[in-house]
Length: 347
Image (cartoon, rainbow, N blue to C red; front, side, top):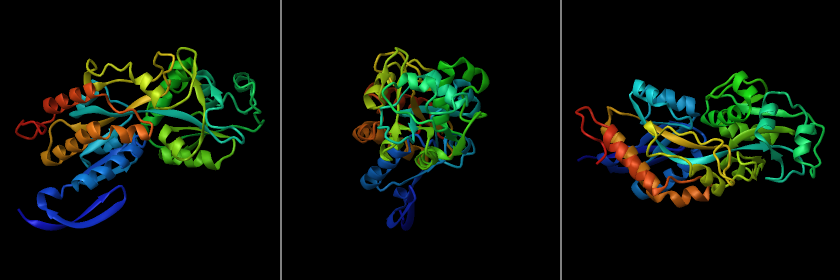
């Protein structure tokens, strides 16, 4: 076995070192920005433990789906699960890696995080462009103790194909018949209103910059950037705050074992403490692996992350997959991911 010099790049940082040829495989992935904070944290810890690097491009779920279909990465990542028929047609399998929440964020003076209240229909009307000012009666009636300005509302939404957009628009479609009819749910929609930012990072940056703005981001971005997020009325009529407990409450209703292709959407779940805009993020891989060694390294990474990365996930207010689900995921790897001769790439 040859020893060679190698350059490993992950998360934008380049490392130069020496290692055995068999140990120099770095894995590549692309897609959802929703799970990027935890993937970055996992990648750093895994690199220190194993020496294997992860180069993950946070480009949005649409880009991740496109790249895995084109076989330019070892795995794709999407917050919009592909339906079983779509998986079969593309020769892909998917599995959930993490659960989190999407939150509305605002840039309003003297409004603390969690202080502002919204209902789903009011959020839909804002993003439809029907509610145009912050002191509109529909918002004021929900927030009688708050001093709301008469300023115009600037809507900030994603400009790229985005699983976060899918979770957001799927929720709005469930709570607003008008939204469902006029806009619908997808990774990319014909927005009736707003300015576009690329990635959760871009939306967060725009909302921080534009006074009187409202957008939607994964909770870790809101928390990291100390943004003012809102509470939202859930299916049971309760105003709830976003955190790992309310995400977990919504996630409890997922039936992963009996879901073909792990297809589950977690928006607008029942439960008094459920956060209504909860979603899972999924990993996509080809069932027939042209590079089985790379595929095995990907599975080693996610096996470690699912089993040993739970504490890191909860620290960032994500919900890790339960142990019972990780066993089902590993069984799916064995059954569905094969090399060219039909041999499983995971034992």
